[in-house]
Length: 436
Image (cartoon, rainbow, N blue to C red; front, side, top):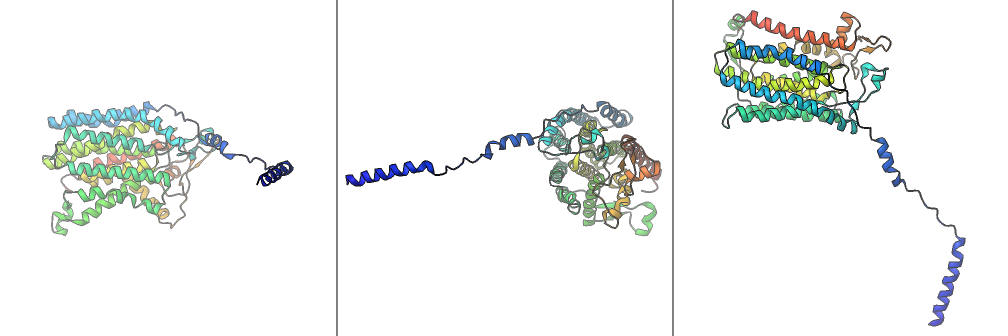
């Protein structure tokens, strides 16, 4: 037994003596140690935004809120409770303006870190065209808007109010649309799917809608139809569905310039506010007054929060609003028109969007080639835009009126939007008593 141990020890010693002759395995590099450095290098540096253009934001606020304020508190003898509600809504909305100004730089840094940014195509070839511009900042406006609208319930609606169900259904549709818009910004959903998103988001409103489903036949046509009021039933619900789809997508395709998406919605919102207060002041019907007051409560915070975003999105834009904002804006305006019972007037306010949609139909239906970005060409030498053959208002204006800068083109389109709204007011005034 002892000998076996010795022999075993000797064998072990001999094996140990031969071990150094064998080739030792080379230590393998450990890539895990370099991975953190690679990740750190891939993370973009913290973004520093240019300060917002507060001059434009405050000038637009004064320009668009002054007519509404004059009509609501000076011209028309509105009910004291209604004026109180408008003042409370306005105060909360004004606070929301500053909240958005504060949160956009914070959200922009987070979105930039997650690589949700793009380049400004209309400045390609210039140093400003190589700057990372954070996208999807409409999410900030949408969230602040929802918080304001929810808080306002505590000051205006009783627990048993008949308007509370539709009010919350409207907010649910807007919230749903913000979510789907942000998903689109992240996943880049195809166009054929985008067309269905507003219809999906409008379902809470359509299911909770308890208003009338009849329309007043224009007086010149009443003798041919045989009735003055036509009950549409479920056909009216289908109309509301398509109205939500149109309003949302029409703002989304009338875009491509710094400040255009937000600017057009600000102009339309201001027109909606003026229309609502005019209808309240001229109508004696209580239900009509309540419907238009309901519309004011939804539009006023939307206007102020959008003005804060306009300060960052005005030329030269430091943030992009993304599909999140265009979907949110379109759904909000559609909800306001549906629950305020002025869908015809809303479509007149959307006249430039209607024209842009009709001109875009051949490309949208793939009859004519449709590029991904239907933008004009940019001349780096002159800094001017030249219209392409694409059938949208941006390029049509350039072909009709000649080359111009991006800022000038945006201002021209917004003036056209404002003139269209003024035309709507003139048309309603001229047809009052004859058309309906």
